[in-house]
Length: 92
Image (cartoon, rainbow, N blue to C red; front, side):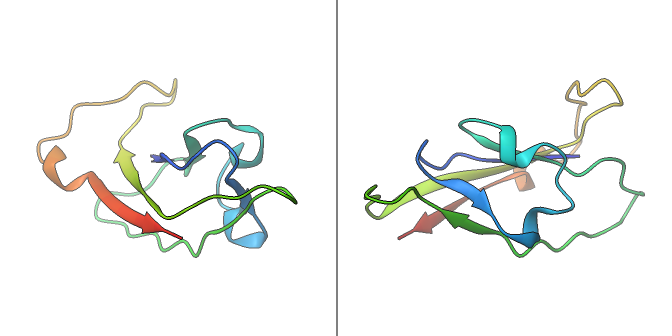
């Protein structure tokens, strides 16, 4: 399962909430989180923190949060209800 967050490039993952995400710290825009294999009907709760570099200013904006099923080769799989895969969040 992959989670992608379309935040501005200066915004990066920070602290332990990202521990379940493979490679999140090394990724670029969008920030990506590979959650690995999840059982059917499983739920995952992530408390994610972000940081920006010293001297960098990021205003208020909107970011897309997109969750997609993936196979073991990280290819997206069809989803019978993909309408619930995308939400828009506000950051400030």
